[in-house]
Length: 79
Image (cartoon, rainbow, N blue to C red; front, side):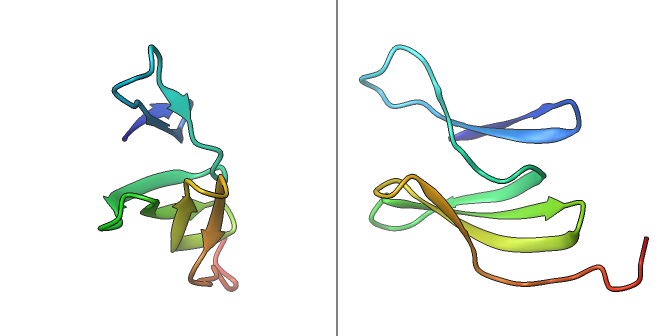
């Protein structure tokens, strides 16, 4: 798994040994960091900074193909 800055936002890719090209993970728009695999390899944990929230923790399930927001930080009145 790796991430690329494309136009100021992160695109996260996986590349399995049996595939000929990387696959883009469908995660929300933002700046991703701290990419970490779960011990069973079925879930990817990461932080994500978006325009409406500070850094939140997300998980991406490879079984469901969905990202889940695990924390709820807010900018409040900061703009």
